[in-house]
Length: 622
Image (cartoon, rainbow, N blue to C red):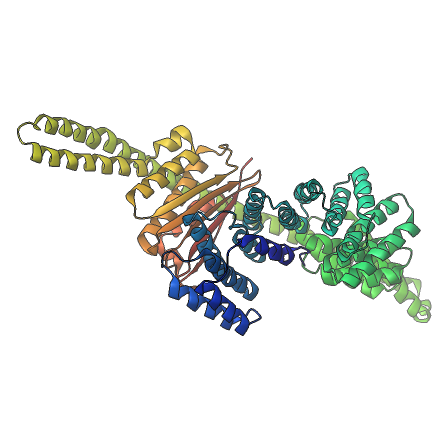
């Protein structure tokens, strides 16, 4: 469960976004009546707000105070009902309205809505992007306290992903904003508590101890008590490393009780996991209780599950409950195989052998009278049979593993063969495009230029006809240049992908069939030219599809690059298509073919009347 202040900071943001205007316009009155009729967010309230919005959409000179309340109510109700598509539509409508009317310091709550929505859709990159836009707006308006809260939300995105370096980066910003304003806020102690835990996970024990002390310095309010949780677990971990187990247990139990009192699920899981590890040998019965608590909370987090299942198995083993030890040992092996891709762990095999030996000893003790009656020959026969069985099982296992490896190798070779054929086909297409583009440029382009010169020479004899002819030749020349550029973008070869996409978007915008906004983030120009060309063709195909099929008036293209991957986002405000539509039939098959060469993936989110959003992601080759 995400442990964040989304709703808390969201409420603070809205109080800042409303300007000092009298809400005495008719829109405000209708919004208040709807709020009075439906005090809690529900479908009927959202429909009422939508009817009001539809009735005034497109009218001029509408009062901002009322429109702000209406946009906010539409977005807020959509968020609370979990309707992600409507959140995006209404929040983006609000942002467009604000931009068109040049209203200052009003975008923050709607950026925040979008950040929350993408977070709930488990798209952390887009969520972080909109939260960062929220922070930019708040900084510009001087609202540093709320900027600190949103930075805390960003840190939580990375904290949940166990990316403690990035989590620490935004926690430091949050700490800076609070201290700059001399705010003795309870959230500040919560930030310091989180920082102590991040430093601990990054093995910076000096900083972990420093921030643990800061977090534990005050705990007189609810939030400061909340801050006490991670400060205590950090101190407990440090004490355990110093082999001060009693003191470590004292702080860990305090952290666990406080987490329970405040119903903080994530910290309950963290402290339970720590107490399981601390008590697995000293008090295995108590360790098992804490382990099951952690297991319930981290049931979807394999990185924690591996450690928890292993420690619970060891606790049962130390408690001589070998059946349960075996059950949890099997679960541990399952999750470990999932994480390590069938790579055996030597420690796992040792634990399993210990359990098998203990189980065998237990059975021998239970059947002691019967075993004593057996003669040495029977014992020898049983031992040989067991040994042969173990050898047979081991040989079978090795044979199955070898066959799997061979099948995987054959599958990889087949994929490589298909990729080579696909690359050859696309290379041939690009070569033919290049040839046609050069013929257009050198042949038809030169012929049109010469024709224009001759037409200019006739200007004095028949001015009107000559001007018409020159205009037609100019149009033909521009069309030849446009076709040539689409076939072979020279700017891609000479200046790279970023400039080529800017030129392509500019050509579309000049045609006035579609208004496209292009944005690149952290693009480093270090991609191979073949990869840049593939990306260019993908974006070109998506924008052509929008122009041909969607009826959209606006589109948004974004490239977002980091050290590990490149993300392409293309959105439009067109009519979209229903979930049952075979979207591969409207031009996306060629995109999937190109993406297969990059080992990329594509997600399409589209609903009729709601527009279409395409999300593409692939790893960047080192």
